[in-house]
Image (cartoon, rainbow, N blue to C red; front, side, top):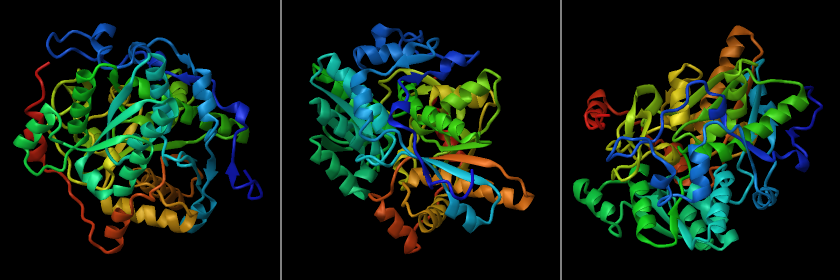
Length: 455
């Protein structure tokens, strides 16, 4: 690619994928199944349908179908913001003095401000098609809740959001966007559910966690006829919907006549990372091409790098199925970091299995280093990145600097999951030198591991 090529490379509208890709179909060793806690038997459709929409349950349990057609109504909605741009970071490359080529897939070019809308519209569509009244969910930093409230407004569904308490307090404007779209937003853990009351009794003054909020949202769904629970990350169905990110990126690189050498994504539950890497991982699984894939997580919530690969509860209240994943334990409540979307105790079972097979790497980074990279990116590329995305930026910069030292010209792709304009409290803390780094001790993690279910 020469310097006179336009800065932003877009796909044509008719090149937006018509199918989602399911990388489980190409995995020789499949992810371990969800299991029912009371019986320790694999979950069947009948076990999940009281909680999830029926069509989504089919997607969740299918590990052999490679491609799922995207319904026309969802494709029509996607046209409001897709295809998203693949951008070459010329100014960042120049500032770093690196021979590396750096590209980022920008998912912040929609009203919700993040990649979460890709799955939110799909889940809202299937809920509407089933004739439901509404859905319940959790949200960490607020991107998922914002996306789902927007999708529910479009399809005429009620939306009830349990927002992790520290994010509810840190990000009032994200909360108000959800309410503007018609969603109700409750700080979690709350006193409106039995699980919330229990967590507040056991952990007085807690700032909450995604595991807590999931428990409350599931309880609210199963307690209200005509409602189902929807989730913004971790699940197989979510990675399926998010595969549109990687499919578009793959097509764009083919048009450029290039391939990425290194693919980097931030990792909390796995929605962005899984979506970005899925078609590239498919090539790797089929032996067609090799890529170096790096998952980046916060040092304050290091599921991959310090977690255990074991069956664990998906939620703090222990009402959800057990999933085999890299986990810090369902009781682990991370520190109140500003990357709220990466504060989940576990990782997607699909990504966990791929990591365990050595198909990808993982590293953890400190919060202050992440914001240093975010500020540098904003000053060079002009986009204020979300704290979650900035974990990938940190590692992309580090890899580009290695190229400068070695003289190698690598092509780096990272996911810019969204914008950080609702995260100004975090940027203020960094600019005022008030931001710290909390890293859990081995003793804290061991105490949590001791409570893992004996499966």
